[in-house]
Image (cartoon, rainbow, N blue to C red; front, side):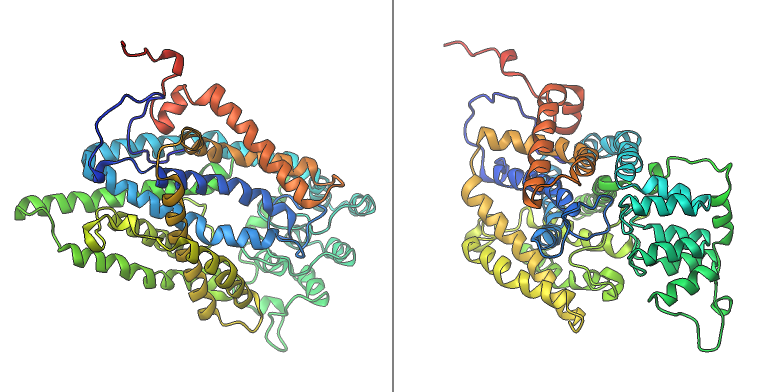
Length: 523
């Protein structure tokens, strides 16, 4: 893997004299970056096995397992770690090669893959979600019945075992759709069958919010009767609420039988490729800042603009600064969440962008920072990893989860614990990987290189596999392991056969030379 590789590599590297420490290849950080990518496969695979706003819900899904804790733990640190490492390697490339080559490399490794992914991988994810997943869950037939007001078909689907809380691509349920189109009989039918009247979509909207949007008063009455909150002021009607039915025209367009469906996510949703969009924006902002720094250096004739101690102080001040954007997650705690919010659209959610920007900036300032004794500070981070990681995982994580999801928990306390967990995992893993993977290891290097491709291509395959095995009568851990192992193995095969030595592989990681193509040096 390498979203931002730091050197042009060959399959067989020639012997060379040792490079000075600042220019050595960071095998440990390369491996850690690849590990963060590979964790994403397991993260998405876990979502089917506990109640979540995900497109596939396995029939074994339950809150009693470990999958929700696994998801929260990984989500709490994975992408902050990734962006910190990306910032570090961005600064490394700038200092080694200069601004022009850095921006050229970023365009090849990030911007171009994103542009290609938007017209290939993103539509493929949409197709898998809308076809395989929706059909496997029985949603497609029920959706059609709701649209054409076919109550008999909906009743037959329920008799055949339709999951009333099955999720569509946006996390909505059949109750959401029935409320949107204004069909109170359908709403009551699904609620009588046990549907959750307050199920939240990916955007955090309950069915009543869809009724509010569409102005469907009768559907809203049914929802309130089944336990949804009554938003009407005492003695007033739904129409008295400000902006009631502000989306009525959109509702009419949806119900238009001649409506045409378009590739909605090609522009407004990047799915899991959102991180490439963030990296592209960070590269542009870094380029502007670096150009200004270079100009000031030339003007002043100085190597540094600020003393090293000041730069290091600014870097460490970013840790408590993380609390500010994190406090805005989950609508400032109104919706209990662990870790950062998701921002997959063309216009990034501001507080999420700032949150990841803090980790990216920390990584930028970390490069070149010196610790005690004059050595590289990055080589001192996480030195006590064997203490940091157990405390973070065994003490901080359970307490943070408890405070976050306890109805009486304090959101500021939860924010502080979540931030502590994220930084603890980051520093601990940096120390762990430096200790065990500081030297080149061929197998680890191969996985690190492949991880970029694996993460880019994994989501359609993972979702399709989840939909195919959701009814298998096997324990959830077995099915989770099956999805992770089979998906990763298949993707590794595609990497070796079709990507590694192809133009795609050159675009993602730089040119690789097959061992058979390397001429042995003369004896």
